[in-house]
Length: 461
Image (cartoon, rainbow, N blue to C red; front, side, top):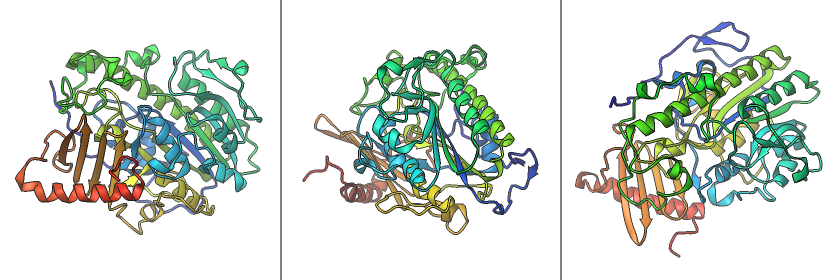
């Protein structure tokens, strides 16, 4: 099979939301961000955007955001305490807190939209909210087509109209009669068209795509021929050892051992879902362009986690490989210059970043670190290192170009050590190479130290 090599992103002409050409090195705009349009994908790989070098998937509207905005190429989630990775991932994002300090239901925990609401913003939601009804009721002042849950039939998504009481009784649930991505895009477009604009707004469009079931509309289902899709170089028929989570629901979506043909079929459907979502994002961005808010709205695009889809013999996101914990992060709009950064950042760093971009005070107690110095060119480095965890079995640390993953399953410890600059697909395990013993031991020591600081409940006491 053809091997996948991720190309370096090329510099392309940049087009503003008004369709006018702009310089790739343009300085900060004189306008200031007053509103936020937050576009949020579900289960989307960080590099599944054509403008970031992906050789197959078609994403013209996300490409446009990359070309006119700022991309963080090394943005990560911290991991998960459960197989439903999106729940803690979203809890961390909305609370600005780390894995063991962000309750999954966000009970009694301040959220970013709640904070903005308390500071005079109209807060709107459409799509998926997976952190409980009470936290949504605190966080949003209006909404439409709201989905509580993790996944559903995209053609019959169960949803609620906005309930100002916050109860969302089962008797008021309805079923969608169009594809979920279109349902949520329509709701966002209607909000942008009807919003009077007396107050600034925070609008969250939380798609359930490209999460399975991967059933894109016919046009998009036929867009990618499975046999023409290259299987990545880190494709394995099965994971080489027990990582503690080899038979979770996501992994049962294809038989064992995996075959290139099965993975190609999954990728074709996955890319169809992404391209369809991209088209709906284009509709939303066009509605924003035609609204009075285009010149004063910060656009954020990201996702709750990545996905394996055949890499390392895995299909899901219940692991700590790059394909599953790294997520896309693009910011565009007023005061955002064109560029990209390789700084190590967490997704939950967005809470203080958005506050500072909107000139809203940053609440105390956050663990997220503002990305504004990087966006403004005042700093290049992000965090010195990042730590990751999946349930009790997997722990990892990223420091510079090095990454170490430690597995403790059934009383056995397994280590993986990767040099990501030379081995971005994590194929060559250097943990037992005597030449890297010092690096391995240093990372193990630093990992335990940082896990203790983070409050890891599974560390020996």
